[in-house]
Image 1 (cartoon, rainbow, N blue to C red):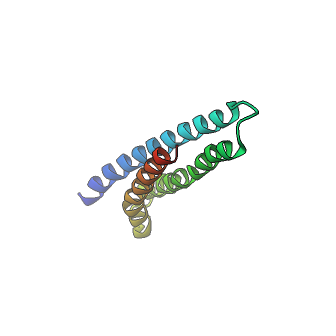
Image 2: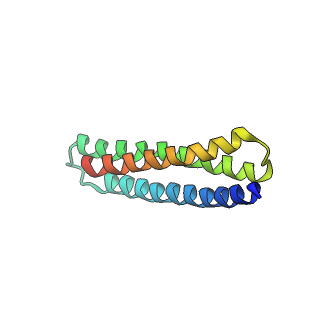
Image 3: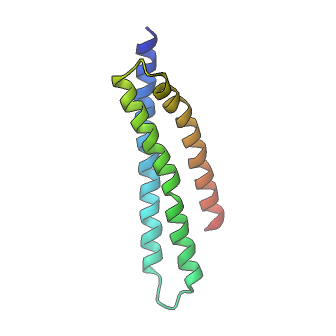
Length: 109
């Protein structure tokens, strides 16, 4: 019984972590495209601000990928408690980092 419940949650976490990573990747692409489309007389500080914010997006993307891997591998090795803890604790942490990144991006831009 406990495996069935945890399996359903692991599948939900796998999908949600994939969604978070996708959202950030699209936003990073938008930021890089915006930085590249500025006219040549745009101050370098402005361009660097967009590029730095885009690169910082790698943090939630990498965390999401780690959570995805942990939940995916746990589906095949359900007796592995460290994998269970990795995705069970990793997803809330990843979500928190994602929200912090989103808030910071709003105030920086």
